[in-house]
Image (cartoon, rainbow, N blue to C red; front, side, top):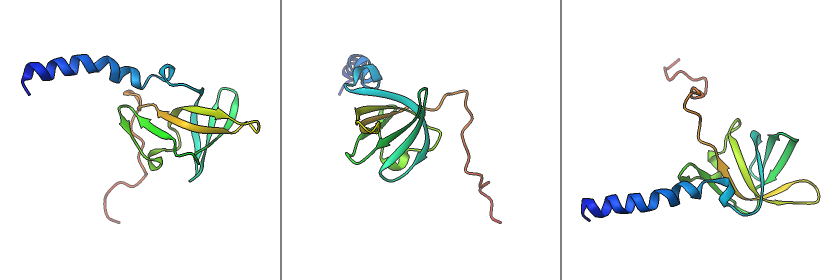
Length: 118
């Protein structure tokens, strides 16, 4: 490909890529919150309305920025938007989970291990 073709493609696709991760563009009920616990089949979120349980049994699509990630990438403290169906019990069956990228002004969280041998 020529440089001109690459520039054209990047320019044409940029708005599409940017919109793909806008929660307003996804269909379904949306719940915003912070992950307070992660289990294999569920998350618990702290939301503006209180605590919410999110069921992961349907293998939801999980995205962080421009990348699709696995459930293992979900961490306590992550800010997320969950898109899915709210059951009569109040639990949410997740169809998609959009993980907010860390803020640039937020220092990275460390595991507490300094990396040197003991």
